[in-house]
Length: 486
Image 1 (cartoon, helix red, strand yellow):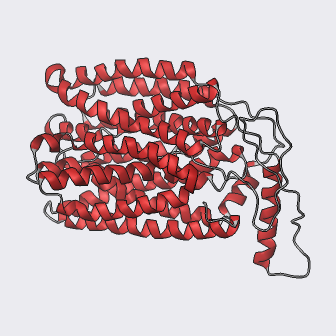
Image 2: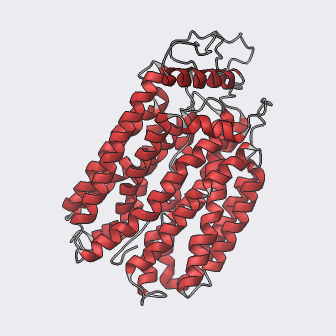
Image 3: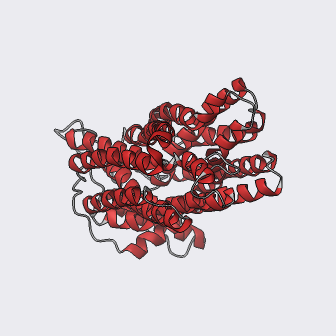
């Protein structure tokens, strides 16, 4: 969101994640004094405070950089003054969270099961293809998913979510049932990589963004719950497929999963309704995009996410093949992905609670550091006990990273109308990581004669570099907000 020589099992990020975490609860700028919001009879709502201080750049003094910062502050103040209040609850809000959880379980849960498909393809339909070639099916699937998030985020900002969810649901089911009939590489590639990738890209980021429009104080928790849906699906689908491939055959097993997904997606479409945001003065897309790309912290966060995710996908793609050859218990090896995702389920919810209290950066950085350490430690997971510890700790680390990392993008936002665009930009970097991480590791693994030292060192080094970039991104955000709670 895969057993053979190269065993991909995408995860996401569920992303993802991922969750789309917090726009700062006190949206004031460094050096400014917040003006309290007027009292409201609706005590359950969270009001975003606006600022009224004059931020016009002083003429004749200060460097060009100071003038640019003052200009950006003035733009942010205007955007924040127009920001709406957040309901922080209510039936529509919680139904949106439930709908997003179902979408993530149905779609990314299936994507996280690619390891099972990789193993089956290697032994049946695509037995004549090298494992690294089969790995491209999963990598391209994730690349299309995350790269299409940029467009889907822009459409979400324009209020098209209901249509995106319906379109994605129909296309997803079409891809699943066409996959059940596929027997050749190009058929599997078109249905699994292209069709499912476009469908997932049109749904997952907008579903999380919808949750984000209802919550501010509890945003990370709610997005962690939604992201935990990925772990639920990634526990159920691998077990279901592993136990039905033999009895029903490939086509029957995939269709059985498809019927279950049809019911779940129907429920998600029925219960999820986007929030009607109050009208905002029209802000052209290009100036908004320009303000975003001028943020140093945005580039540091995107670069950090790219590096961390490049390393994260390697164990997720290869753990089944590695564990089956490690000498550990065969049953544990067979269900290694399910163990990882079971640990990730709890980590995604707990990390959301911590992020709401401590900040997204303060939560994701130690999680990314643990992730990097566990990728290196994968080389020592060659016994049943060692493998079990690795699966649990890696599952916790990757679950927290996927759940909270997107919150770093969204904590930089000045208005909810930016959430879709910022999510699309951030997930595009994740898309590139998903595209290149597994094939590079597969090529290195093949060149090393199936020795996992080089792939693990590559993945661990990339995640370490990503952690350092996130630390730098946190520092810029601390200076910008004047608070260590970021």
